[in-house]
Length: 510
Image (cartoon, rainbow, N blue to C red; front, top):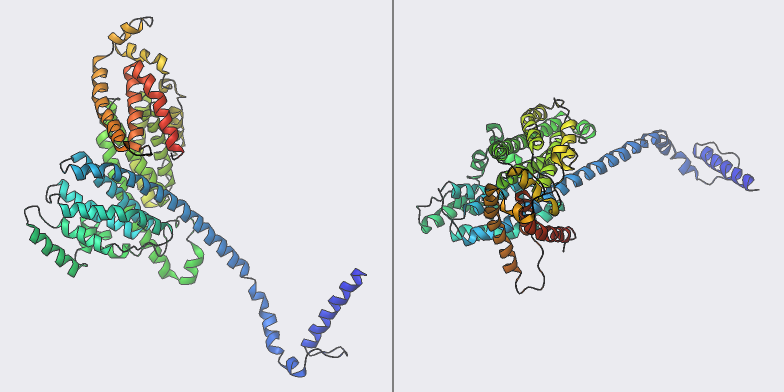
């Protein structure tokens, strides 16, 4: 009975279709003659109805769009992570600079932080963040080269910038690329053009002129930066980068939009790619300069913590920049090296000849990989073997990169370093035969790290709860590694569990 009922329904639909076509079947029509006469227009629409089939294409386009959004989210997360690390650096060193205007290390660290934020912001199309960071970096460059002296006006400006940056990052996270930062940029430009021999009245005059005509200094910003002439000429166009969302272009922004908008759109996309490419090439060049400056120091003295930190930071920057522009070969190779150096810094493995050789090989190959990415050609080198070696070294799987010994065995390296002939000496004799050079290095480093710990304790005084800082964690890491390297068992034994506790607490956001 159910089948019969279904057949009746099908027949009823067929009869209605015939009636609509002007062929009644003898039954009382359900449509008026007027409606039947008007039916040719719907008839045409029924014939054209299959055109709706492209909805599958629309669905595909929507899916493609969602894929692009996923890629955007990945790039966004990388940028937000980088920006968060930059803010931590600023929060660590800026108070020191504000308190002591002659603190050159703090000045260099703050300037470097804004430089990193500038590059990352421009790469992902966060115009307001990138240009604001550049205006502060440019100002601090003038302080470093002593053409401008630090003033209360300058620190007041940087205070406001630091307060504004977290909200700008959140705004960009929610799709807002152009924050209201023109006034801050104008003030930074005015301060940067004020020579240290000028009076406060002259500063006010410069500021007034800059506010009256803010467009005048805009182009020199791009020229003063390290860009090529071509990019400097297109400096104002760079601010429009966020609209096309160029970040995921290497994979997904391809055929459909270009077919709909024509060749002009494709040309615009190429221009945007070129601008982002120039920024990445500039960043990679600066990273290589840093590596070439500090790597020889690290190769000469494996215990040079300052050089080790700088080289690790350089690869960290290269990792982030590479991933953001889609230079995945470079980004992943840099990450494998950074991860390996992280293990050296936290004392899990020794700096050794195998690691040194790998660092040299990677550094030699990076320029060629950057050139391949710039020319959009297949990478000339399969980096999987280099990455595999870095991972093996990080895990202590290569004999010479054996894991750092436990505190009980920490005296063995010191015996080897001092040429001890036996391993059966009592603890007191071992301590007496510590390498004086290693001991001196340890003492110098310890003084600095104890100062960091004391500063943390002072800041935590009279507060119910204080988060463990990156500087505290780093100080404990380095103390542990230095004590193990020098073979000072008691200090290594005390620091190791404390460092582990702080690391775990920070991982749990405590």
